[in-house]
Amino acid sequence: MQIVGIEPGKSEPAKIALVVNLAEGTVSGFDVSVPIVIADEISITFRGESVFYTVNGSINRVTGATSAHTVSWKKKDKDITSSYDWDLACKVTNRLF
Image 1 (tube, one colour):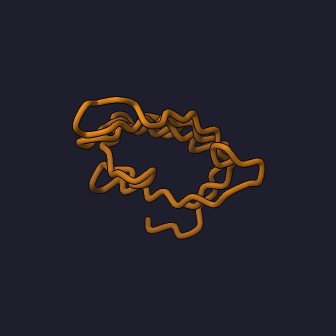
Image 2 (image 1 turned 90 degrees about the vertical axis):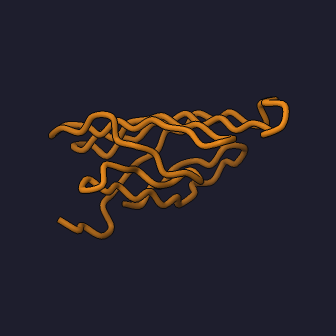
């Protein structure tokens, strides 16, 4: 999938790559790969974290509307370095199923 939306701090649309792997149950993008929590005919919900990053969001499989929230922090002291809400439009660029 290719995501097109406004990158935080910018006023121009940006292309962001997300890879939805239903077979493995993961969504990769936003600098991390996270598990799919729920996937049905209408939507895909994903949530997870790494050592210094967390992401959660959903993709509407009918309309392509994608929303996500990302937070990153310093590993040492857990001070938040960024927090973004993403509202994006998704389109399939390479269907693998």
